[in-house]
Image 1 (cartoon, rainbow, N blue to C red):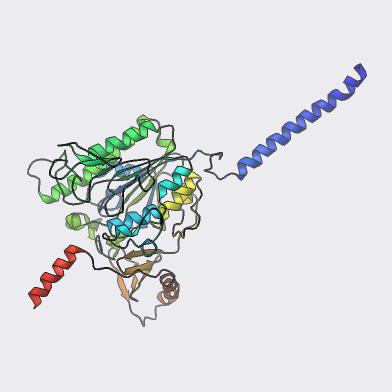
Image 2 (image 1 turned 30 degrees about the vertical axis):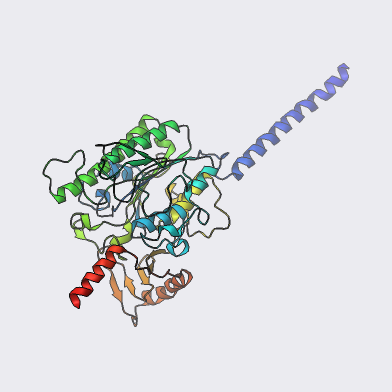
Length: 455
């Protein structure tokens, strides 16, 4: 027995060491094979907060050239990445639908603010449904107008929203209705809805701080009517009130970042700040300029000022601080980006227009777009780094955008324009613009009045 023990002891030791080595090798290969953001990945999946301001263009935020004081949003850019070429659909409803579905208007049918019933849960998939399958708790707080049903029907676990497209956006009273909490009317007379919305977001985050969570935060600011904020002084004129609203929006962003710090969640949370479309008429004189220069277009137009919006990504410890990125981004891209970061599979059997920019957020090159596509109610264009081509055949040189869009003649001999046109035209051919609809009641009334005047 003693001889046999001496014979087998080295063998047993060698066998144990060999098995341990194989086990470590398997673990290493397994980790390398996982998606970076998968549940078993090297890095944890981030919490995601998408702050979606209303009618806030590049001329409204200080760090993108606007004249207003926005120190908290500026701090997000200073501590993260500013995307300089982000394009929305130039109107609320289609913009939000494109964000949440990852699909262009001609695919969903939501081509203006009056075609909301074209999208239904049995035909479209929204971001919360995808993220919930990856274990995320999801909430929506703020504006849901111009889209069918409500956030809960579209897959959000919880929601708080003002009760319709107009009433209750800011100050709540019996005249403009209650807000809706998980679809149920809830009274709060005399309260300022943006404050309530902020408190709801903070409460949701506290209850789900162990994560991961996704918060879609479509803010009230700074859609009209432009009303006094809790910080406004009596007698403030329209220009001052507009500035008050931009500054109060910035204040709420700062308060939210403070709460994330308090809960020790900043390094675990990706915060995205953007605007749903360009500056609206309420702020066009004060906000539609960059570094003192007026920009081309505003909300509702197919010009740069209609769609070019601020986009900031901030994820401390992951997003390179104080960086600017000139890649083209459009609003369909949020869908694939969030799915990638969450380690969630994209829905099957759905044609997505979305391209992930998760790589750029993490400081890598990623897979940048060559073009973005913008569509609204029968009009569309495709834009690359320099040129824009519309579905009406008009071409523009955007070398001096967002201040100027210089027409390019059809018979132009400019070599760069000649080279760009076929590629842009192919994109338009592959993206057939949905026919426009003249179903806006206000537009019809204006047309009738104009016809009577001209009769």
